[in-house]
Length: 200
Image (tube, rainbow, N blue to C red):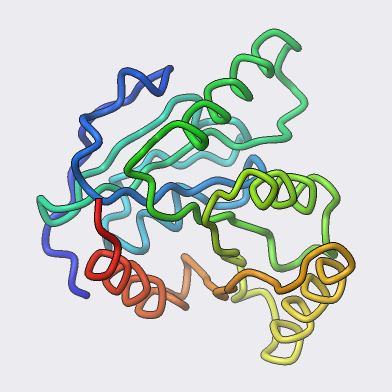
């Protein structure tokens, strides 16, 4: 798939204010500072589309981007950021939960995971919650340019080994690097296939 046009549409603090659910939608989520905005910028080949920051917790709203005038990418707030107050953290969690469970045109959730780390409990528990609620998702490992080819394979294998303790099968996984554009073609081809096969 070629992305010829990508534009910011709107930011919202609640799911009910999001654009009309009449287009295929793909949302990106993960722990704070895992590289959601950077990945969106890499996929769209536009470094300024989604706002990035070295400080975790930059994304605090549901951000919609219209791609090729046809479908949406959505940048969601990160989970697990401890440096916000309890009330704000609960507000973020409700916003994310409502969006994931109630957004009727959400085709797939891309769960971003830092490839440099051992399987993290917070990521495993979040994906367990998605599975329990029947939310379609795939795993997207980020920052893979920091690893060797062998380390990349081991990273996916480690997650699969841990998840198979409770899962019958593990979700599809992609290895990416926003810096090196690794995985761009594979992710866009996957989205293109879903756009063609999933009916709204």
